[in-house]
Length: 117
Image 1: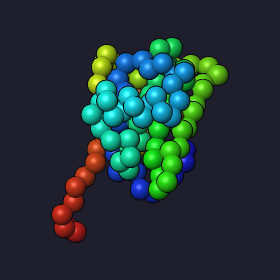
Image 2 (image 1 turned 90 degrees about the vertical axis):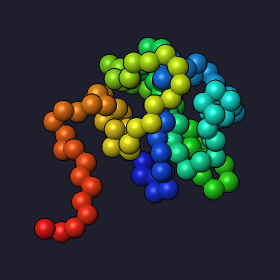
Image 3 (image 1 turned 45 degrees about the vertical axis):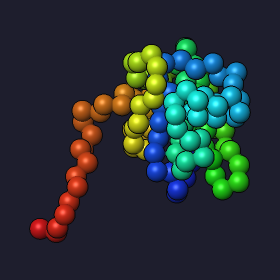
Image 4 (image 1 turned 90 degrees about the horizontal axis):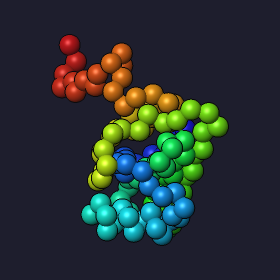
């Protein structure tokens, strides 16, 4: 997985997306369909109906990146839902890309520590 240091949020486009869309079509979907700015330091993740392909849109500095992933076998554990977006963590995105569910019961829960004991 690529390491993108300035990413603050990850948004999944719920439901299936027509992946024939390229940068302009996906950016318009983010802006018009989800009321988010495609120029934010965020990853916008889209999946096809068969759940074996996805695209990630990312704005960096002076242009868009478009990452594309196609599985040769199996499918992504895409969350249920028909419209809108779902905000997830970078950690959950790594799980999704590895073929795992977003809700890993065996994973350590995040801890927001305030002081050292």
